[in-house]
Image 1 (cartoon, rainbow over the protein chains, first blue to last red):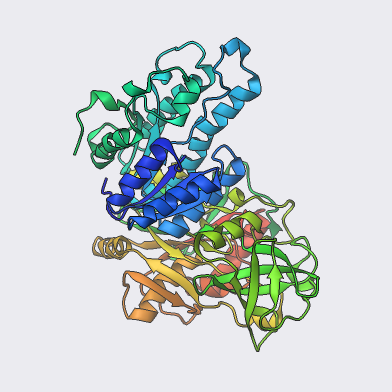
Image 2 (image 1 turned 45 degrees about the horizontal axis):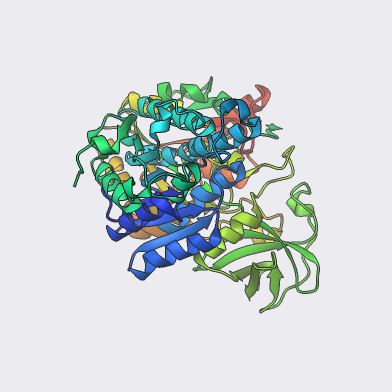
Length: 242
Length: 339
């Protein structure tokens, strides 16, 4: 995918990997629209990008809210132009401290599925249609090794990420040869607020920074068409693509 | 004809009446048969404008309730708009109360943080105005989406959410009323077209209000409408022409954009423009050969446009056939393919 002049929508864009991706993509000439729930942090990130000459816009919204989806998609297209790249980065761990499935409330599982699976489904449904019409586009979803490994106590998050991976495969299969590409990427463990919420005692010195993960992801975005449509990629297993 | 009062559970269950001018026949089918009705060299052009929530409730300068119905964006935060008084979409627009008179500089308060100032009042009708929102850019869009509702009409059964008034390919929010001819198209049908070799292309056309319920203002319709034609669409039209294919417009807004571009620039050209082109029987089409459209009553203004595609008697016979066969009209209704 061509990044310069692309319109990119990033959910969970105010902090962590979303923020790092927004900064990196804007630095390469993309117009980025960041979606997040918290206005203050979002404004800071948008201002930070603009202060370095990048094009950035913020939309305060919750991707787990059904009523927010068309508003996000339409506002993003109004501000930055038809969306070329959708990065589904927002996610919730579910209740923390993490707990056994047997101790997880049904409502907490539902909320994790709304944010990590149903929200991305709704956004892809609204944004991938116009991409098919244009004959080009990329939907990149951020996954996790928890989608393939059964780590005890990661239940709600794990289940939602496994379903996200498979939804990505299905979209890829159904939209084969349309020019619209779907990829799921496990970026590896990062030093983020979400990681410390999940594992407060982890040694942070072993963790990569969100900026370093974003650099790898940029290579994947540039070379997206080189991977089979619907692929699930593990960033650490790929050479850093330029 | 019966009015469709709500969206179908499955949008591709819409019926499609094929009016074949060359054979002088009517064929009853469904929208799922659309790919079979076309040839592999044909080109289908859709309007990819998303429908914005163009109806905003506000409090006027003297405390009365007023509806701001957006018509078209004419500046960074400026919109041409119609004002309506008390009441909701459940009351037919022609029976709605007029709003309290407004003057230049009046503020219409939408919420504590979001308002619209009257910056122009039309001399033709005092409730046809230009408003300037208190915020521009992202702030304006966020205000419109937080407080607006889709424009809807009294024949509908229930208040429709925003997702009910979008085509499956809707992108930028330019339309204040849904470009509804494409509403029944699903991706299954669109991908089947592609599979058969039919090319898809797009324009973005800011579909305006079809009626305001006010005689003076309705006589001025259509207001100039903003359109954009991408270079790929210009190329696709040329390719279809060379191959002997037809250009099939999905809806009258696509006809206005494509033919409006020719009227404005002398030929179909990529880029943006505004058109208030009136298309009727005498209009000589330069680009569009066929049209998929809603079921339009001969008394409606849209019917006038259809006469540029087929003989009026043939269209009227088609309408009578459809009415007798139980076809439904309006945005969630059935469609008609004129070839």
